[in-house]
Length: 334
Image 1 (cartoon, rainbow, N blue to C red):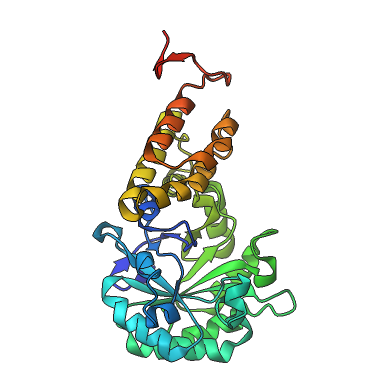
Image 2 (tube, rainbow, N blue to C red):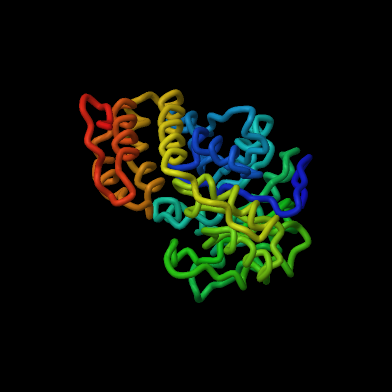
């Protein structure tokens, strides 16, 4: 699969996720083998009107390349103008036509465009004429089960100038519930000549291999499976190459990455904001980890990096049976 100057056999993509895929988390995913990163979803209209909160979403580091910036909107000219203005800072421009959130859909943006293929086609064609970078589009199976139109919709996007299409195998009405329909990904892949990236329900290396086998897609996009789990990319690469699943990170490795994540966020956003965000991050990192329930119960009290360090220290002192090792003045008693 090729996008611009980059080529891979079966690249792994990090899906754009609001409140998750900021530069700190992206860098952690890159270290674990993610091939293509993506920013959080950014409003083209907010960029156009120079919304001050949008600037933070554009922050990135040189080591993140290739990095896609994802824009959403419904005005072809604004989408094209904003994409053209920022394209030199990114390797790929992505368009969101799959977001199911009501405040986005009610503005005729995101997955609402699945119900307006003519406008979607106009957006892509207008942008493609203004861009020198690859233009990709993320879509869904359809708006609801009565309007499953991903195949024809994707054909129109290809004709309009899209370089690749990502298909999330759920309708807008499903949001993120139920099971992703990988059959629709296969149908889109068979209908297009440009690359198709499969998205939905990839939580392990085995899931990734099965999606490739069942859909024939060119690349794989990970979303919720990567929250609190940047190691997913290393697991998928390992399984695709060897058929084996590598061991999960040790408790020490988990705590080290959580602390590093918190420090990186603090550098970008300030300690107060970073620790508010780390509350949900710690919960995701420790989901399913034995004896971590007490840790998660304390997440909502995080306010400083010292709080996070103490939380990780306490977690490391929990023995395999779940009891805490006694300490004195913060030091473990022999």
